[in-house]
View 1 (cartoon, helix red, strand yellow):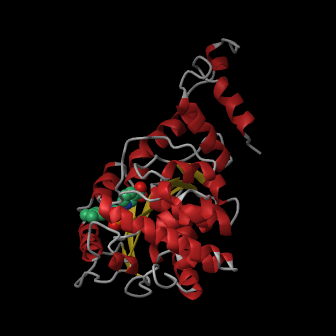
View 2 (tube, rainbow, N blue to C red):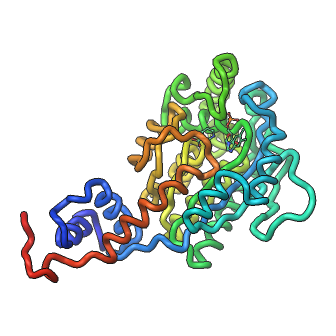
Length: 337
Ligand SMILES: Cc1cc2ncn([C@H]3O[C@H](COP(=O)(O)O)[C@@H](O)[C@H]3O)c2cc1C
Ligand SMILES: O=C(O)c1cccnc1
């Protein structure tokens, strides 16, 4: 059993002054504990991008129309989105899964694309439950299958990304519901909402969370303010952790899914590393609820898994220290503490 004390002991014996690599050493400890080995691996790694639309966009909660989801799915399929650029830069395998896009791209799609669409978007959570329990479970299962498939293929580090115009509204609802964050903090600009749009978003989130809280069944409460891609990411995290993968967590929307996973499959967060703190104002509190401290605070607010992709070299660095550095004993010097 490798606990934190064992991992620190190992690091303190390496050929460097004790704790001289600062937070990189804390990350190395986290990796060693998650993987239960003192020579952790960060390759192969995979990002699965889950895409879906949200009926709540009809309320005017986003600066963008739902059509943009399908257009970005086409862009990701062509390899030209920010997530593609960063995945390629860091040697990360990428898959794209349509969970429920309203206007999916037509024509031939690449091999890394999977059509698992469960509908043309979630229902408008301002007026009715976003997902039925059946839809929630079906989306969870697709995500779980993706994680299991990745682990079977030997993938060590799993990232989930999302594309879905309007999805910071369900993310805000889930953060309020599951991490007890005040609606005022949970609602932010998302993909650029101005003050007027954010005021609508505040009201929609407040009312939807109040309705969700009155649901007796916790799964139904979660489903009522979720979305297809968010439920899929939750299943992906739960199954990935169960299968022994290391989960590298992206921004606010991915963290909303992580909150679901931890609530329905307790212990999932033990496999997580928080890549960054998004500029969305509720993200820090959501991460704190999961007991996670973000590696980066770079004012990123895109989603698509980009914050996690950017942090991959930090994981590589932490693993390299554990795997490749000689011990003080090899030098013939003792431990200086
Ligand atoms: C061109 C474009 C690319 C994106 N990639 C991710 N998002 C991000 O922004 C959306 C959520 O923000 P909101 O809730 O305010 O609509 C999601 O699609 C999320 O993935 C994008 C948004 C846009 C416009
Ligand atoms: O942090 C995120 O995940 C995020 C922020 C803004 C828009 N979409 C996603």
